[in-house]
Image (cartoon, rainbow, N blue to C red; front, top):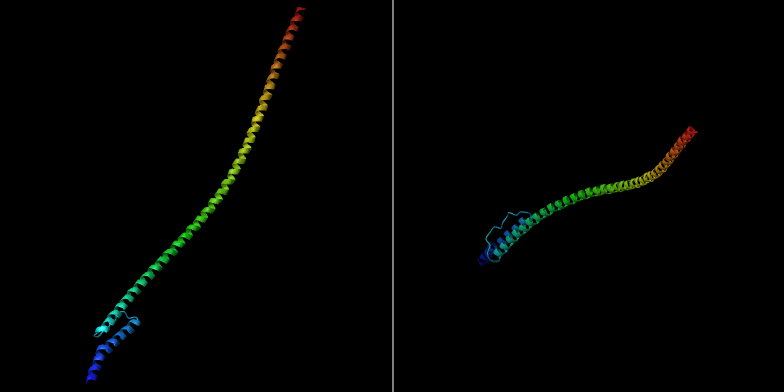
Length: 171
């Protein structure tokens, strides 16, 4: 009888609670998060049950946190990839703009050389015109002097002719 009572106590106080904890652990290991331990727990087994349930709750919370952080990391990676693509596009646009600026600078340099050459040619032509004008002025002065001398000579000839005419009439 004592053995039976002892066996009954062992079964109800130790074996059944241990079996309930084992089934709970198997259930959680298979993915079930809604199961709970059933039965009457006392002493150390109650402490074990509470610690196991707390551990599962903490693991579930950690898994949820890890999933949330994984999703956040995925979104951050997508944002980073999008920012990288935008940066690549801006870099491409910048390279194109730099190419246009370089071509424009080359054209401006060529135009500047052409304008400088034209200015040099114009300065040379202005010098030629000034030299020609000076030569023309000098020739005009010589021509004017010659005309003055011719006028004087014509007047002398006219005077001489007038004197000769008077002399011939007097004689």
